[in-house]
Length: 357
Image (cartoon, rainbow, N blue to C red; front, side, top):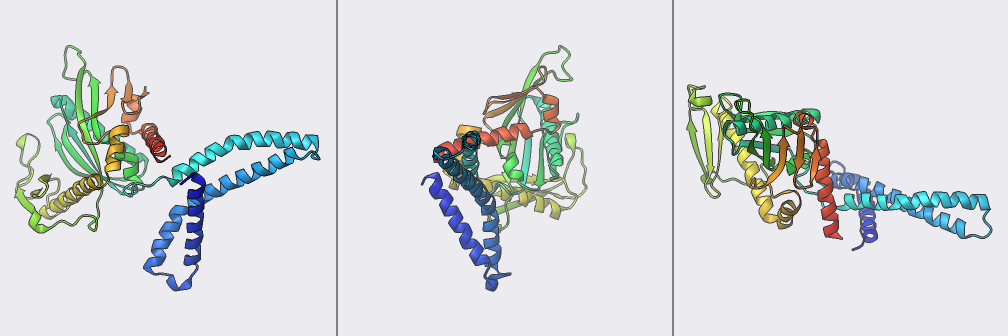
């Protein structure tokens, strides 16, 4: 199906929805809510189609005016200038419409679970993991998202062995989904007396938050263990068995939670993380194209692939998937990630457009 045929179908569907929503008998019903959501999604597409249609129509009028031998010479000259401008605008309008027609990842509008873990590099890797976790927290703050700490395992000098957060807001997963993978840091550790540059790594996973209706978890498939929470170095921080470890026996996925003093709250948080992991696993299994997209363009997200390097001596950040290098490491770590996120999104859109052509 070519672009014009796709546009015609969108306009026809929009008109059908408008007519259906005008029916007073469906007001307040589930159908009304469903149709309202669909028409809201189609509205920006139809607006873009109308701009493209208007531009094409105006081009046709200008060409007729220029071809008319009875047209005034000055008017013809103005028409030719306007035709040049409009002809340059049309490809951009067509591209914008094509982007709007791309199939959406239904998880894009969801909240997300962020998991950061220290990788190779010992204490320096844990310190870097803490830097990354704070970077995402600042990014969330800049977008006015809610960033809720769910669990953190600290080291003695401020590093994070692992940390988990729930991020809530508009289009959270869409903006963060390409962050999954191995992040590498090159810098001189504070504990290094000889000034040698060390390389260490941390892994990041961003999972779309699942609703209860998305994943059915049977109680019989869960093994729940409770134990006493402890702080860094084994120091006890709780005198009751409030920490919770949940094992999903069919998949072997294990989630531990000890951040709260309440066993009930820890279990609720652990179930939230478990549900997100199971949902992501199901999405990957059901959507082979999506998995291939991530491998070929923006990384597999399986945490086995280096996606980005943070080089402190040179003050640069390089995203290896799109060969983008920014010489503003301090600002990126302060949460200014939009330039990288936008570039990754554009690259993914370009690949998907080429695939659908």
